[in-house]
Structure formats: structure tokens, C-alpha cells
Image (tube, rainbow, N blue to C red; front, side, top):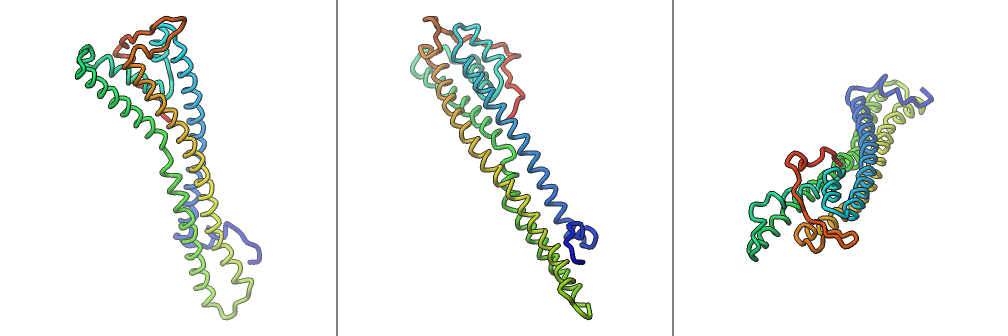
Length: 248
């Protein structure tokens, strides 16, 4: 055997070496699938957030603001719906005493923070898998290489005469396992870093909107205005206050 053949492992390798290559192949396929899905999802999330923010803050009347919250898509729209619902369903929201206002403020902070945490958790979908592939795939490939070299040396030891041609072929094919591990790990690490950066930017948007939403719901004088008109908070129908099924 003078020319390297990547299929040599599947023709002559044992179940362990074949299993290593199959595991790396599956990890690589899933990595690229997650990257494609998550990339498209994050871009759509950013566009949806921008559309919702533009509609929300440009609302000039209670009806248009209500429509923006009801029809909005994306994480920020879900946060607005949940915060609005919490405001309208809180039993003591009409208590104007200092203690009543403080309890309402604490309730709104908890509700918005919980909604914010859920949206941030959705952003992390797939990140653990990418990090795991990036850290484990090289070692899986190295294990395949060590195992392949071990088997090749055992087979060569029983031969009467050994030439460079007989040694280079099996050892070269075993080393392909390390290359396969790196081929699976490098894209995973790159995708993880890119998505991690994207997630941090989105989380900053979430944090900023959470503060604005809290101020808007708690202080009517900070509500959006258009041509001097004041926007009042009005209750949403119970059937329309459920968060959208859209995920990140």
C-alpha cells in the first residue's frame, strides 16, 4: 500500500477505530446544522427586535401601542407582553400608598427579570454542544490515532520482514483520525466564539429594554408621546397575553 486511502480504516480498521470516525462525522454534521439554524435564528431575532422597538416607541396612541405589543415578534415583544400582563393582573396595582407602590415595583422587577432570564437562556441554545465539540473532538481524534498506531504496530510485529511501505501506510491512515478531530473541533470553536459575541450584544439590548419597559409601565409620565398625546396602559385580552412560541 503506497498511497494513503481514507477508506482504509473502514476496510481494515476494527470497531473502535471505525467508531471514532463515525462519532467525529456525526459531531461535525450536527455542528454545522446547529450553526446554520442558530445563525438564521439570531439574525431574525435581531430584525424582529428592531422592528418591535421602532413600532413600540413610535406609538402615538393607546390603541397603536396595544397593537404593537399584541402583534410584536421576538424576545423584546414577549418581554413587553409579559410585563404588561403582570401590571394588569397584579391585585394591588391600584394601591397608591407608598407601600403599595413599592410592592408593585418589586413585582414588576421580578416579572421583567424572570422574562429577561428566559430570553437570555434561549440565546444559549446550542452553545454547550459547540463548546463540548470544540474541547472533546481533538481528544477523540487523538484516541483514534493512538489506537490505530497500536493496532498497526501489532500487525507489523508478526511480519518476517518490514519495509517502509508497510509501515507508512497504516500509520498514515491512523494519523488521519487526529486530522478528523481537528476538522470537527475548529469550526465548533469558531462558531461558539461568533455566537457568544452575538449573544452578548443581544443581551445588552435585552437589559436596556428591560429598564425602559419597567420605567414605562411604572411611570406614566415616561410613556411614549406623539404630538403631545399621552399613551395610557390598557389591559390586554387574556387570550392574547401568552408569549409567542418564537424561540431564539
